Image (cartoon, rainbow over all chains, first blue to last red; front, side, top):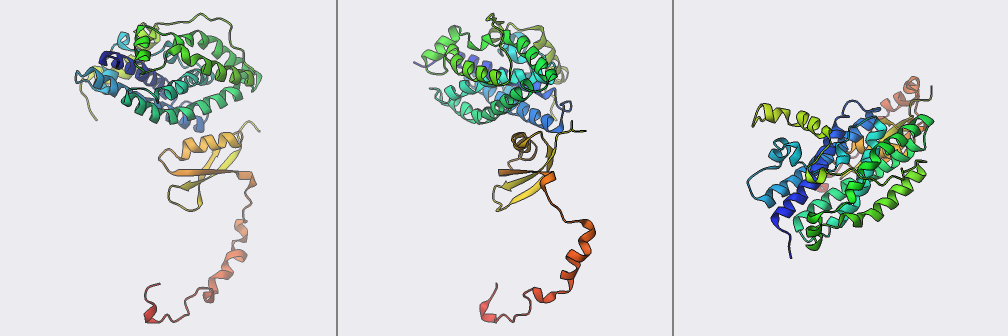
Length: 253
Length: 94
């Protein structure tokens, strides 16, 4: 039993929009990072994510079969059409919060992609195969920085704990499934979101312990992104990202 | 002041190259981050298959003021170049 093309398109949007929005957020640091080396590293991560978004959104168009392109999906869709997690659209805050957000996402992204490598849909498996190498490095790097900054100075520790407290309520959404997730799991396209939790818990708990940080014991999850209900921040991101194509439709350079 | 990260020299072995080649330098608090940073700063365009980093302070350099005594004497030793052999035509291109 395969999944419907609509289900695959919707799934590709969820994956692609996470990458696109997080990539855009990371790119906001370009030229502003605390050190030249970090600046380039974050820009690399941003570009990796935008590249991944291009693949996923391309798949969404192909599955949908209505002649759209990854570009039209990225630049001509309203906020309610976006399917990214609320976590990735949260404002950058300070450098510590940006790194913490990246870490919490990477720790989910890698096990997700590793599961997708075995997807029954070959196109999904191919994208996952390519992206998982990039993301393995992202996780390596963000984990390392979380430990350094958490177990760093009193100032950096305070900032990292504040970042963790702020972002924590947005992590639960990664593991909440809906009817679409059930359909994808039944068809062997994607894993059930909840099945990724143990790997995430293990990596995050071990890292936070090493970083002398404490996860809040609140389990309340902010949710809605996966079905297009977003925080006010996404509108501002899109206003900036889509301005050119909205103001000058079809502009090329 | 020690708030600045120490400087590291970066050496990359290229895809087809034989030796690690010096490509530049960067700042990092320790060796692990120096490797990460080198990967991000110097191998973005598929330049390498292996990275070495060395703390710049560990590099021992010859003194520029010694240039004369160190290198000038080699100038006039033409006999150190193997250019005084007659190569028979039969050998062809070497």
